Image (cartoon, rainbow, N blue to C red):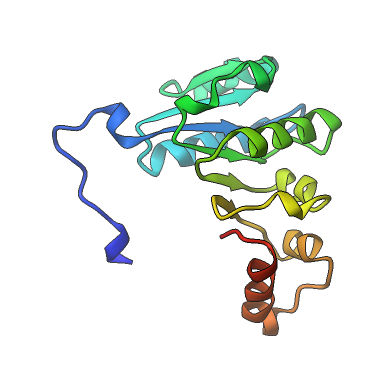
Length: 170
């Protein structure tokens, strides 16, 4: 574990420590977007931009004034190359629009993509899009949907190994 922790450059600045795009939140699921954005900030990202519904913007800025926001824009209008990583899923819902956003991100961003929560449920419809830059964070129920079989806690290591052999991802 210590091999993965590096001292921060004392001469560094916010752009030195990465720019993350958080795609999260939908009507009634604003907390998920705020918690995910806070987590990105607390983990040490230098800059965090939250792609959220307009109705969430005030709550986001009150909760995380250091985060930037993009509200109610089409994902295709965003230059994804400005980001070092993307986190997608918490509270985005299972709508056609959310699925379109996930599909666009997967097709147009080659950096690391953390796929969580609702995005995992959407992803379960087409696992062929997975690649080695995708990081999945399923709880047991989400993993069961992804693999199309019951999650067996006694066989979890074997189930995960089989899954990543078939679908390259972390």
